[in-house]
Length: 246
Image (tube, rainbow, N blue to C red):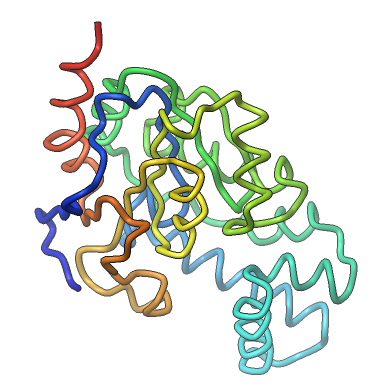
């Protein structure tokens, strides 16, 4: 289901935002738009890592990388299982990118700053990557903390244990929290745990990502869908959340 840049979808039985006191955001392809060209760089760096590790040409490394991704959920998890690589070395290599393509997002920053309560980042990437990207967007100071893949003991979303570790570490009541995430399958467990869920999709297809990663699917575990995060926060979330704040 394609969405226009100004379209938001809310399921008929979706919870509102008046009860929310903890706002949780994924990082990659959620807090920045596809034209920031962050993920294509990371994806290319992962291919280069696989090339170097196995002595493969680019096409073969790319095919193996995608096989790993579909089988294990992330290439990092696959390489840790298959070859016991140092995850920190992998993350440092994969996130060694050009950040100049990331532009300050004043509208997003203003909206996140106004959200009443705690704000946290939950990412399958590294803390350093999250902090550098959020800083370039101008939103880092609005977040209390980053729960990264190392904090998850290198078990990636959508594994249930990762969400449980996040909730426990930060003392989050899932019934009073909402998660913003760009991949639909990553919202199933949070929904089952009691969190509100918002799927963030690109306004137009992103050629650097697989189709299932950016589909605006209407599933029971998805409460809201938007192709404009800042606009959704400003028009759908803040009027309700701020009205409920004592």
